[in-house]
Image 1 (cartoon, rainbow, N blue to C red):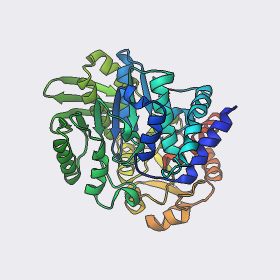
Image 2: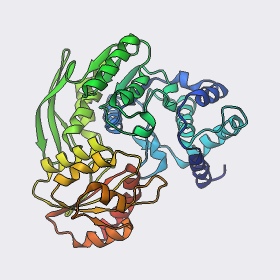
Image 3: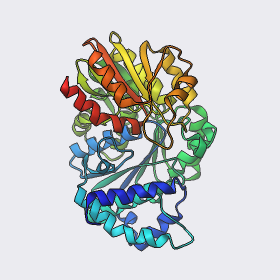
Image 4: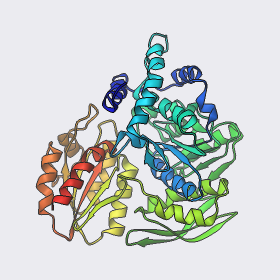
Length: 429
């Protein structure tokens, strides 16, 4: 590999192998690389909603306490390198080339075995593990589960702590058609005698997690039972709350990320920080500084332009609630695109309650739901259709008044594609 473009092209070429749940290929290549996964001090974070935000809160808190923290997350918003970051900063292009050069021969070798080809996500997971273990060792690494948990490539890791965020109906074609089946896959990251924190709220999902924790003899900390948030207050550009557990009480904590759901994510990070015995000053400062792109991200103030990767029913419901709390007076226009393998009917249902001009569009993806499909499923007769999101955005933006806001939402892959364009557009006007 001579160039960054070649390296990324090779990684992306693995997309043709799709999604292949299972740890056999990961076990094989870890053995070939000298078991780098055993060198890492890992916090493993799974769940349906809030994984990325929880990673960010915890990473920011640990950074404030002086830890060097590596994070593995997906998808990226602005640059591929974000997926493997050190203290919140993406690794360099040169390091991507280096990692591909190291692992490519093994990836090609495994294709000659009965285990078959590695997927793109497996390759990137291997890159992250090798980087944090051998190229740039970390004090702590935080790995976000890609899909499910039990058979996800990140589950090759044995963490010091597991976190499972709230659970909802997502990836039903792979993980299962009931909340219990999905929770079973998510709970697969619980390891023998390794503590676990969960924000799961649905009774049936929580029962699955409780049973799995008992089976694995893992101490379980449950949001709403072992720790709580109260005294919640909506700020102009953030949220304020207090955190209460049997061991600590923190009053008047503030976060800059918008939405009551972000308080839930922050509380999981706080509980994890307490497990790691992080001091209160670092915790408060880390929470306030935490930022996660593409999640209720404001990229312009007048008019307000907001990006939010609300990619499942819970995400859309949280978006609507946050808009009601923070922007009750603004007239709203929303551009929305989603993938067809999502629970589109329940995703689109909350949009009916939103007083807004709704535009359904689409972007380049083999998994895309067309703008027409979104319109038909939504049953929002007043919504408009435009298959060309770029043309649609160029057309809408100049018409916005200062008391209006533009919301771009749906798939995180859509947000990733739109963000650089809309930022440039905002600068022009």
